[in-house]
Length: 225
Ligand SMILES: NC(=O)c1ccc[n+]([C@@H]2O[C@H](COP(=O)([O-])OP(=O)(O)OC[C@H]3O[C@@H](n4cnc5c(N)ncnc54)[C@H](OP(=O)(O)O)[C@@H]3O)[C@@H](O)[C@H]2O)c1
Image (cartoon, rainbow, N blue to C red):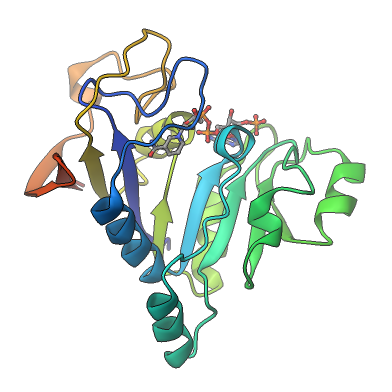
């Protein structure tokens, strides 16, 4: 058993999620940031890869006070559980995700994570070990489901999202397409990794809806299972 998994990313009109230096850039405007905050507040957990933590240092907290209050009124923590997929335990102990806002954090590591790093990180987060080399996402999702996570939001980056698609672990995709061009053949895209080679392996999507937003568009897709 695993949670319902949805991806939420913002990309430029030419399909890039940051610059070739992997620097965080502003793609969304106010409306999209509020939409993302609402999605976050409606999720049991929010997950990113360690590449995103190192590049962007996100806190993944719910920013809008009313949304946090609504969660508390429902008997939940102010913020969803924040999960980092990080085989080697490279999350910096000072990372915002470990310090900003209250609530549970999970760092998912594999068996190759050095004990010393984990000893430091477990002061701030629950360490979940899944997998030998990289994090075994199926095992991690089973763990999350056992601990009550039914709705999981994935905020990137492209390497983690590729792994999820290649293992058939995605249910829905929400892509905000911003009104700018970033360019760069090495700039990250919503789904990087190796990519599929054969058409029969492509992940097929069913169009759900499209909404104009912040001068760009939000597109929602369901994954055909
Ligand atoms: N525009 C947006 O919406 C948005 C959102 C998020 C991120 N971004 C951008 O995306 C970039 C970061 O993306 P990224 O692709 O470099 O990193 P990422 O997807 O955030 O993290 C990938 C890393 O996670 C670790 N990992 C552990 N187990 C894994 C598994 N089973 N599958 C996949 N990864 C696993 C690996 O590192 P270890 O081997 O060390 O564990 C891997 O290199 C940044 O430029 C950031 O600005 C943009």
